[in-house]
Amino acid sequence: MPVFTHSACLGHDTGAGHAEKPQRLGAVISALRSEFDDLDWREAPRATRGQLLRVHEASLLETVLESRPANQLELDADTVLSPQSAEAAVRAAGAGVAAVDAVMAGEATTSFCAVRPPGHHATSQTAMGFCLFNNVAVAAAHALDRHGLARVAIADFDVHHGNGTQAIFEAEPRVQYLSSHQLPLYPDTGHAHERGVGNILNAPLPPGTGSRGFRAAWGEHLLPALDAFAPQLVLVSAGFDAHWRDPLAQLQLDADDFAWITGELRKRARRHACGRLVSTLEGGYDLQALRECSVAHVRALRDV
Ligand SMILES: [Zn+2]
Image (tube, rainbow, N blue to C red; front, side, top):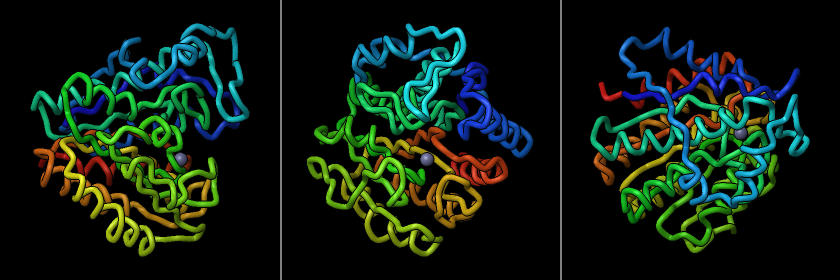
């Protein structure tokens, strides 16, 4: 299975004490390298300006790519640009584009993007919530425009609602966005009544929700909607911050739950999309949980 990453993603420096730190990605990569000896590690290319402009305003590209801060520039209280952030951001977005190209070319059915910064909070014009470019949205738009797909699903099980992904596609019926997330929690969007043009489905979960509530939300609401949509490609916003160890939220999942949802999504990809599934790392802020969950996720994605 191709796994896309780039060393520049480790160079995005959010500053001392920031939850979205380079060690997160280091933990994921080292866990995957030590657990699996058959992953096809590939260098993520840079997303092109044209690929980014499919979902982002030119003003955001200018902010992220042209600021060139000497040290750190705070875009908001959570979101920081450092000297290497522009390169990290274009590689993180480029990973998803390359992974879509790989599965559409039939090189593999599934692929994982081990990247940071995460993406799902970034809107068309605003970097926020640790996110600079919306990596999964750039990948989805590439699948529509470059590969001519008519139905692309984005399944987001990060503990936070992907407000940026929803906002980018809420009027785009070719993209379905499905999310489970804790509510109330940052960014306080993702209520059940937010439906877009019928292409958005949110399953907010109260703090303290564990395996049963999570699996019921997907099993009874989100996965049946995914089946009804019959996507030609499944994209996954894979955040592991709904794990019980995570310091930023209060859901109570463990690695088995992430293996379960990955397997369920893969079943739908096989049923509707010739198996095509591309997953990209979003959040997850406890290093031990990140190691366990990324291994469980990738194990369930592998072709063997
Ligand atoms: Zn998150």
